Image 1 (cartoon, rainbow, N blue to C red):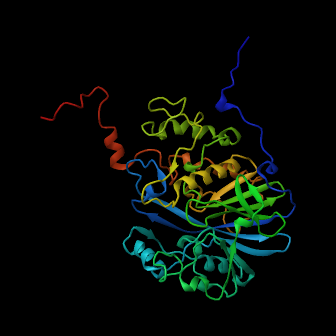
Image 2: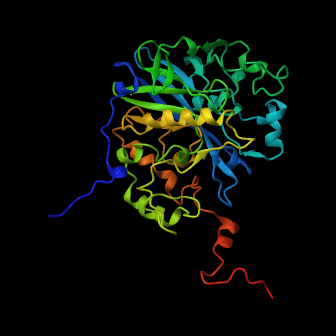
Image 3: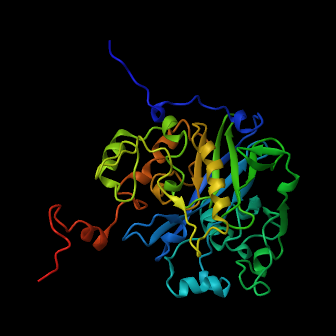
Amino acid sequence: MRLILTLPFLAAPALASFRDFGIPASSATVDVKAFNVASFTLNNLTHVFVKPVLPGQETITLPIFAFLLEHKPTKRRFMFDLGIRNDPENLPPTFAGLFKSKTITLGKFKDITQLLVDGGIALKSIKAIFWSHGHFDHIGDMKKWPKKRKIVVSSQTDTSIFPDNKNSDFQASDFAGHKLIKADFSRSNLTISGMRALDQFGDGSFYLLDAPGHFGGHVIGLARTTPTSFIILGADTLHHAGALRPGGAFQANIPCPGELVESARSAISTDFFWSPRTGPGRFDIASRTEPLLALSDTPDSFFVDPTAAQLSVSKLAALDADKDFLTLVTHDGSITSALPTFPASLADWQKQGLKEKLAWLFLDGKNPSFLFQPKGRAKREAHTHHPNEDVSKEDD
């Protein structure tokens, strides 16, 4: 008789219902459409987002996504984040200086207002704009919008402006003529996956979730696209999919495709990453039970509270591991070429098999966001010694 052993990391747990995460039932939904507004390169700054940073991977290029949503019962349109303005030289001096010094480089692009108008979406039809947080690559350029837009932020957001606050991303033009609304999570009586939640339309179609750690007042959007499926607009809870996956039950419920399992064996450096079935020079992703990357906790980290930020990632990961939730974060470079963008709707993402298509792209050694192997000169030098060479011997 053949004995079959079931290993703990191969056993798939029972899938949860959305109710198990604290989400009330509802038939009200929203449509979601994505815009890839721009991409920017952050030179020698990978370390402010994730760790470890492998030799040759010190610079990172990130997309900047923004999202147009439509509340299906009322046909009201709203935005979740706006991306970056196309004249960063007119940001407050501290941030404009990042571009002037070439610390951040950004090519020419159309900002979200141009993309919307070009796509036949009248700006006046968008009544409300949700900012996940107050960083310049999320708040766009509000002076280009019709007046009297509702700007929704967390009540924990510091909305002081430059020059009164020299460290602020905000300027007077960001609020002038608009209505600022502060979402107060202290009044919330609902918790979703451990995060305080606010039902924005009172019908369960769209929630804001309190997700602290990256920046004061940072929030996540949770959009119900069918009565039982959701898109998580994860904003800057993390900046790379490797900081989220393959944590918890994710791999049991959304298995890594066989071709990526195989390519990862040689693509992922075992000098930096390990798992129970990994051997020297042969990485095994199937037995990995925690994310490959952690959030940065360096003194110059882009997370104001790395401990709180890591907890927010863990809470998000519980949703992400479920087949009824698709996670989209603002700067996920692994999905740039694969995510359907406007005018395509993401509402039927499950029928498209979109989660399975996107979830593991960050492991592809050819993907622009691949960070798991030293590259360039550093990689070549790491393999110059013959295994039997006496490296302690001095050169002649």
